[in-house]
Length: 264
Image 1 (cartoon, rainbow, N blue to C red):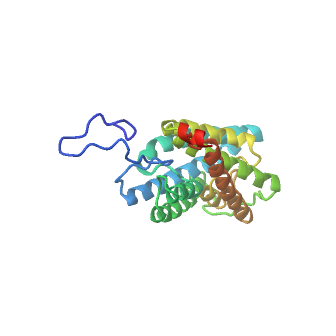
Image 2 (image 1 turned 45 degrees about the vertical axis):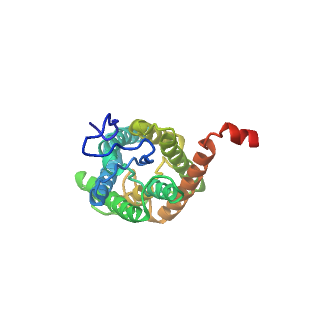
Image 3 (image 1 turned 90 degrees about the vertical axis):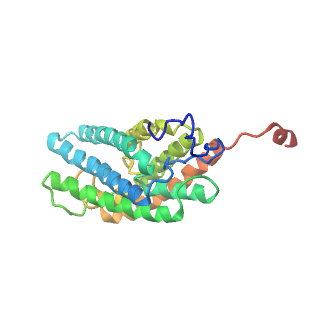
């Protein structure tokens, strides 16, 4: 039985779980999973994600000089890789792989919703950043590139920063919207599909992730970003996360009861 399958009956030696018991939210972090295991899942998952992004970018540039084909190969690999990673590690840590998602979940938990605590977020975020850096170094090593070479790919233009706001807001809206409508079982497909689409419809090719942004600064390859461009990208991603949560609050506001409607 997977973590998402319902339990038909509780064992005779244990009390039945109340129907009113809080459910895990956006990250779908299962109860009683050791924090060390969750941190390891976030580190390994983020490392694998960045290795997929950077590695497929290097491979694409070796196979073709057509930039459109390079982006197609890079985005396709990312879609499949991200979907697999969410499916595999979602039951362990919630498969955030993204400080923006972790901080957004912490904020909703702080305001009475379910999600990670401040202590858990303080473990998740460094794990994600360390994993992203390790993933970039691993990808460079696999393709015989310098293990660490700062990217020269400037991404500081205003239109690219706007693209990061849009990409991150859409990602947060999607994840938390799925949670609000009890459809997180579709997250592997939905999130991977969104990121794949956002590669193409946003000017920034949808980093939408502060940890991945930091990791990609360590590689001077197709997927890299110049260190000087990193602070601006992260700032826009955090703004996008706030915008995404605001959209969730407006679009998925609780239905009003008949008495509330009469009183209004």
